[in-house]
Length: 120
Length: 96
Image (cartoon, rainbow over all chains, first blue to last red):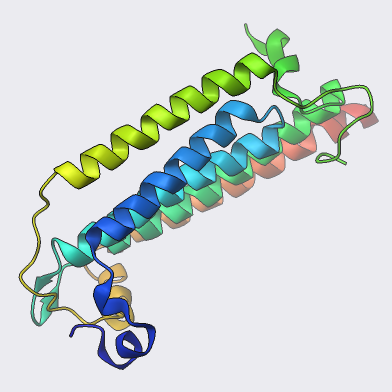
């Protein structure tokens, strides 16, 4: 039982790698559908965040179940990488929101279908 | 507001777009599930690490991963300056 006391409370022992992978696939497809169907630029940004978080779930799940390292020196590459993905997602959201603000100021809409005259 | 719908613009996708997106999404979901349930993943015999490795995570961030940690701070600074510049550019144009 690797869950310890909290694991006993939440019955995490029965949840395996595939559960996390199925959750991740579902999140990824939700994000993909959001990106494809939304015409609101902020909605598309939300879809991108869903896809990134699906990747994060995969990283942490594989780190925990497949490559947890040795006793005494745990291998934390997946979790650290997930933290950096979160940081990069925040940076990307900040820049994208600034761009959308400029776009809204210029076109009075954030419908991405209207962005055709942005192409050079 | 940026998020509210203007009365003159329709934000709903067309029926064809919904159909194509549903097909692509369904195919992607089925392919991912097939891949997940047919693959054999390398499983550690037993997870030796702590269940909630917050302490070692903090030590790793300031130890083995110190350089990317500092690079992330530089990146956040650049992004903050860039976002402020992008958001400010239009307003100074209005004044001038």
